[in-house]
Amino acid sequence: MITALVYTGAALAEIAGCFAFWSWLRLGRSAWWALPGTLSLVLFAVLLTRVESDAAGRAYAAYGGVYIAASILWLWLAESQRPDRWDMTGAAICLVGTGIILFAPRA
Image (cartoon, helix red, strand yellow):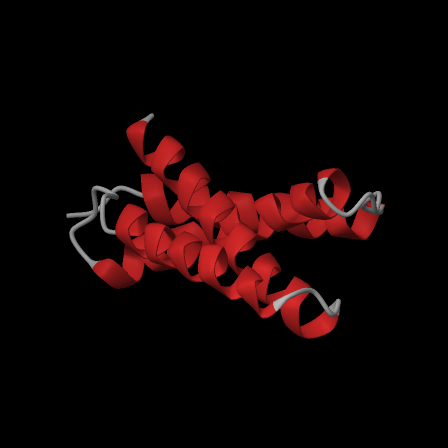
């Protein structure tokens, strides 16, 4: 449960941070958007270190599926772009991969 919360918080922080830079560089917003964007990306990095995992690479790999699903949700809620069936199917496949990485029995 803690891992899911950390991954969710990390995804929100990463997407918000990247979107701040997107807003500055692609949407013509003020360069001041980079400041909260940078802080958000630092928070993302700190949160990701809080995942219980024996290896950083495994934690990052599992996080990838959460990030993809959260990005599709961001697309819908923050950008008012309704995901299509391919967006949803891709996100679901990624979350299955996340589950396999996190919950597979290991020796």
